[in-house]
Image (cartoon, rainbow, N blue to C red; front, top):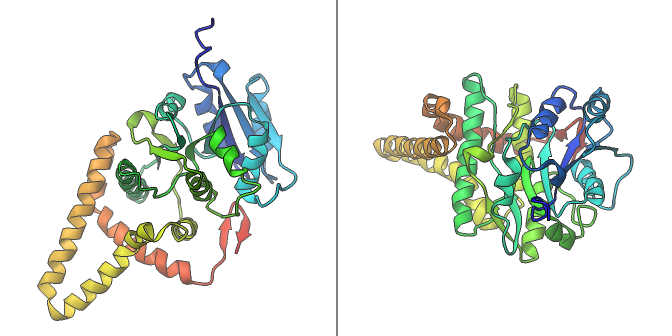
Length: 334
């Protein structure tokens, strides 16, 4: 018997659209995976790219038999955009586990082992940990935002409270995916990762959250405020699809600001103390996540994180209700 006979076969699925500046970084990181090479395959779906994405992928995979490129030319059922690409790739994949990432993400060399480790019993979804790379205060604050949010989600997962999943670092078992009928049959959502997560849990599968330095993947930060607001608007679409007990804490900063404004008039010192206290708690949570992920360079930036978080939440709420269409990968979504 081969030493690899008892290992689990994994299919890595990547949707790519106009990714000429990022796709090679992604594929190079996957090529360095330490999981036995005969136990994983890669399926890349080119979603009508208008740049050199297809050519770059072809050049990279030409001598790599476990890398496959599929040009997406039609839609399957309800699927659109990234969900449509993943629907096509899942039909081609041979693995018992689907590992999903994005074309702008560089994964760790032990990614597969870290994501497979929690897959026991009825686990249908495993969410990994991803943060943006950071070189300045703006990108560092974005990184801390991901660290903070995913740290809270990981804590909620200990009580089996399903907050959300993250489609740039996500494992789905073939059995749980097929139980939903696939992306072609589930309702379309611009936050396709949460929609699949919800559908899988509705079928009595469970979930796990991986939050370790060894599993850390790196995406790219948002460079401009308008693009950052568009990203937050997409996230808000997904957040508003969550159960009420998840939505309520997400709106807590808004209620908190209303309370602070009222107290600023009636009891200004109490208002100031509450504000300082909230910032201290947010900083401590962020620092705990930073420590877990061994991202020591983020410690100093965490001092400013509460301001970024509180004002960013208000800006997102305002922008969400401004009648501006959601644009993603050059496509407009209502």
